[in-house]
Length: 578
Image 1 (tube, rainbow, N blue to C red):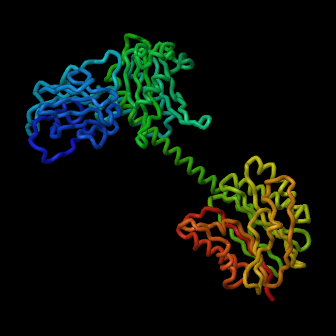
Image 2 (image 1 turned 90 degrees about the vertical axis):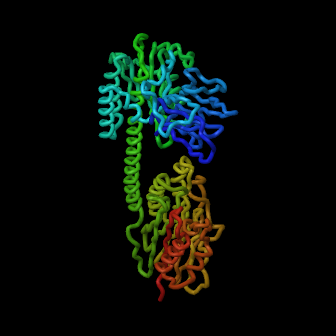
Image 3 (image 1 turned 180 degrees about the vertical axis):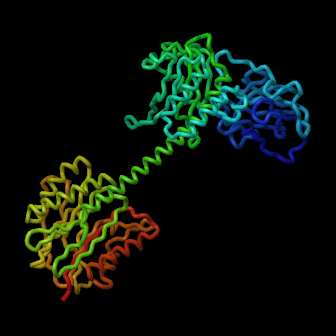
């Protein structure tokens, strides 16, 4: 992308202009119509540079018109502004044909109005406008478009870039490709003694985010040196921090690294480093670095341009591989959750019990693929049947794992201990070592039905009170009093769990439910509440199936248009009428 000119119509006679001598779209001109022209990467600038040319500051420099005279001023840019090869440190007057350099872009200033398409002098080629003053120690360059870099590459390097880009497009396993990239760079840069590809990984340590550098590729001219080869963190972190590719003739003499012991230890001389960056968040996630330990073998700025041309597609390929890996992980997770859902369903009853003179209804709907709610029908000795409904605090896999243990332990305790109170106390003590470690608890309602006497024994461990719907009563009643509701399971070891009894007459029903019923939210975050449940239970038929279906219906209607946020479970059973 070339710098673009913002339009200002009707501003008077055009008296001066800038002509592009070096950079994309050479020969393009920018008329200086305003009294203040800002150059930079910001979209609000008057002359806008490519947004990903990070060597150029957001507001890099400005040209001022004061009393028919033009001046150049640097705006505190990172890499400076140069006028006729001299860095601009304060406001400088502009004269006709002065040369202005901003990183890779070169302009000439002209005081007279340009022709419609001002030509360059015949003896001045776009890439040969002035003798640029080479910095003897350091060159800095931005990550610019690969196409611009390719224009200046020799044929062998062009072929290498094509080969690398071709390989990058054919694989999503970048870890196996990265060594090949460094191998190719070693073939092209005979002066390179060592090559590295280093990635940055963000981790949390002591609640603070820190960056960890991970060398993915280490290559040396002598393979036996690779085990002991180390890179300079100073150079890598400088490249990551500035997001700039840079070239250094002698790292040991560079002021930026004058405190780095590693550079002295590794005898690093000429070094070039290019960042690998994400287009998604404009952050550098790694670097490619080549260095030499021979003072006579230095990298050139053309070498750096080629390294930048490789870093661009390598960055894109690694981002694609990361996204591909994320898709694979999500797909594996989806399959695992689907399997976990099927396993969890296997802990729940496959069919309703058949008890003479009784009817049953059950509904289970987890908020996620796996949930923390549980219900069960456990045949006991004689004509007794235990009906249980529990709710593990929390959601997802941890809650589902505890739910699986709850299912098996509940069956074990109720079958082994005929007294419901002692059975639930035993269950509490079995769960306590696990719930205390997981910082979780379980609420449970247990009803033991004796079909011979039609008597139900109820134990409530911190659960919503089951509702007793009498055949001829005006409204439901809570089957357990507040005094009989104990602590949830797994909170205190050795807790007592008292029981209550209720006699079922023909047509009477008992409803057990989780708080996902009463806590259901609508779009305005209003809960359904127990009052709406009472109203639904009073209307229409009072068979267990009819009652259960009405409750499910009002929950769905209340939460219409909002995703389910809690598991919904209910069990309703009752004695058939005469």
